[in-house]
Length: 496
Image 1 (cartoon, rainbow, N blue to C red):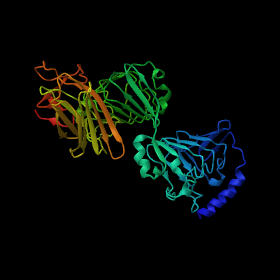
Image 2 (cartoon, rainbow, N blue to C red):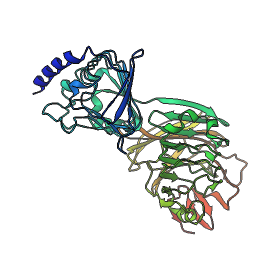
Image 3 (cartoon, rainbow, N blue to C red):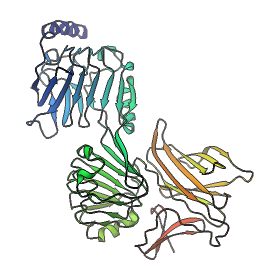
Image 4 (cartoon, helix red, strand yellow):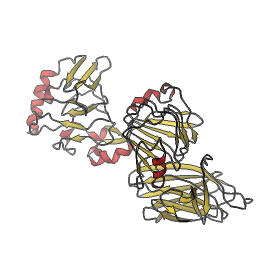
């Protein structure tokens, strides 16, 4: 049947290949425009598209308005389009690049009245010049069950010569879906830069905005002053990294398509109108160990879920500004952030560092690197999820430091003692599975000086506006708050 279909395709192609592509048109519930000068075909969702998105449906792929059109060099499918039918770009031999949106849910399905046996093909069958596919959907789109990725006829070209760019965290989804026959690569950042006092921002092709650094984000009068203003409507996910203490006024105002956000444990304040006009923001994970203060209209009440530490849940509920949201404890929710490992360090009289991090869902090993800033010492351990050290290397002076690992609830604590006094150290942790790094974290700290009789040095931020303190007791980094004592991760209440 496939051979018959390909023969019919050749006949049909002869009838349509000489026709010019109009400058614009409509197919299914999609509008499209074609720039003959550049060869760029742009497909967008039409006004009459259903709520779930526009669909480029075809009664017969042979008669697609784009079939066998060698003048097409690039196809851009815009956000809002959810489906592209079978053979849409059939045998466009000069088509080199196709960009599919994050809204793409299905690909290669025949329309309801054209489901003839054997006609199960992806939209780009026969595009022998294809070099690059960009998939912005986090999950691999559904495709017709009749499509056989192992069959060369599925493509009409060698897929191993085509680069498929996807969001790095979704690479396993595409491999499991059969897309591993392509040369899969991670989507690069579409833009990045610095702002404020040494802060950094990065906008990924999948719609994730990541903020990293230490300290406060600046205030802005309007969203047009934001460093990422050009991409404000493209933001779907926000990650504010650990170390950020203040989110400035209007920082993410008018991020109208933002759906989820992670706010760090170090967060103290959120400025006025910081999340104004973010009605699609329905999920926030706030890892703060104190209830952050909210400026005027910083986070207007909406039908959204806010996840906080279990031991902080009641505090958030009692706060008038936060209590209007649906508040839940995230307890085991540890995959919410790209830099999902939290690290703190403390020093004691034995000159030890205590390094704490959360368990990350899906991770099989954690690689912990501790390096002296002057290069005199370096240690790297690989730890599996059972707490076994599977590899250990170090470059150290004659008095080699020792390490001890503890599991505490949903977190790990590594103690390294015997370090030098008054020395700066860099700490890096990678949470990995068998194929990729799932989460990373980097921080710096220092051991105490010999002159310190208490043997305790504060590191990280210490918000003076709250009646709480960090302390070291019996080798444990603790947080004392409102007469109770918690471990550094907040996951376990420690009895007095």
